[in-house]
Image 1 (cartoon, rainbow, N blue to C red):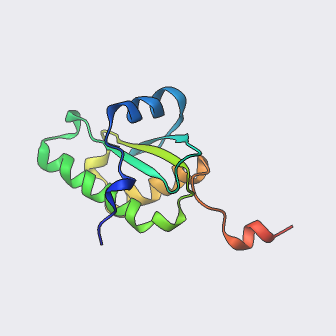
Image 2: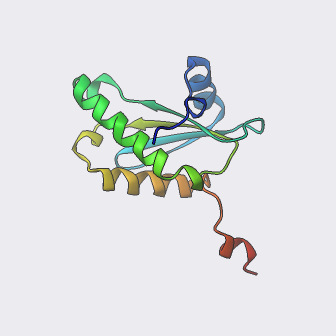
Length: 123
């Protein structure tokens, strides 16, 4: 199942706003930048895979893996966030599971994920 196009950040000004006004956390394979935007009904994400990662085949593979991670955890991401996922130089050697674990750790650290119902009601 494809992600809807309204979830993707496409404009350079959106990426620049997240970089200048948002916060970021670095992991082993990824850097996650995020900015709270109250007017968003869902969330938006953008991917950055620089030329230093490898040729186009390598960069596109990383993008596919990162989109799959976002798609798999779409229901867990809290609405109202713009996030930029930047692949680091170690990312081409990482498996899907390693990238997913790194993304989840960063998203939890930045509080981008919804609180589980059991944690929200616990005293």
